[in-house]
Length: 279
Image (cartoon, rainbow, N blue to C red):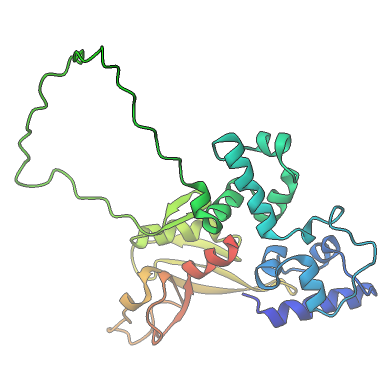
């Protein structure tokens, strides 16, 4: 993960390397390994990031020609207006036909219109509440019951439940995952979705400890990897060292919730990862 100070130094470095006093967003994307979404997560719009790095702003830098100057709230408020206009979550066709901003404003900033809608719901929850349904108007003439249903029988439930109740984690709405993991398998599945994006390659996965072995990309500029053993748990507090050998069975623990600051091995908390990627 990159800090605010590291991102500012990177912007300044790329600008100095190109010999410019103002760095365009596209030039930064082409000349830096830091994702543009990470920059905007820490510093806001690209214009705000350039200003934080001490770069100049061209006089002809207008909002109409540079989408990154449009504030997030303004874009999301427009989705609220389209929702009220159409009576349903706006689709891409509705945005193109009736929106004040083009669809590219949303896809470039949040990767998809669905993710932008998720942000709008979080920022303006009351605006997306469905209108209360009007009570049905009964015809005083027609009071005869025409339903074929005559009896709703009382069923007899078994003494033992037929199946266990399904547990669901907190809502995360991350890509294809609606709820947070509730067990080790869910953590492994989520990590598999992100492995390549986070610079990991798995060589095998097992139910025994260590749960996986593979490589970790630790130096992007020098193309360097290192081998590591991994374990997957829901919470870091459930990790236990190997009592027989006296050695730690893994080099990296991947978990959903890091709730043990005294964990003896390095921890990757997926909750924090998807929070940053989601932004």
